[in-house]
Image (tube, rainbow, N blue to C red; front, side, top):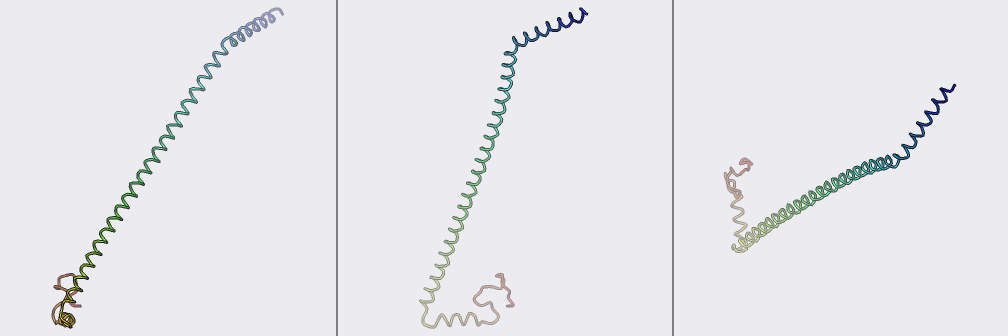
Amino acid sequence: MRRPLRHLARLLNEGREMIELLLKAGPWIGVALAAVFAAITHFNAKAKVASANQKVAEAQTTAAKAQIQTAEVRDAEAQANAAAAQQGAAAQKERTDVENYVAALPAGSAADQLRNEWSRSGEDAGRGAAGSGQDPVH
């Protein structure tokens, strides 16, 4: 019976030594675990910041594209408005020229000229040649 008691005493002694070793190394193990936790948290935060920066860059790119498209639309509208204004001015000038021409003709001569142009047989009177894109039969 002495043998099992010796064995138990030896185990208890080894257990005490293990506890003493843990008490001595425990703070170092705690520091190492804290350092690992801090490193993981740091890298996780860096990844989140990088992801946020990427999203900001994408949003800025999208906003810049939208501004460019808006400027292009405004430019196209301005060009269309300028072309319409030029066409309107040309039409007004043509109208004024015709009105001045008609006003300069002697009384009744404009009506006679129009009657003659529209009553000629066999011609496309007043509308140019038959090959101008219009049906010569009608």
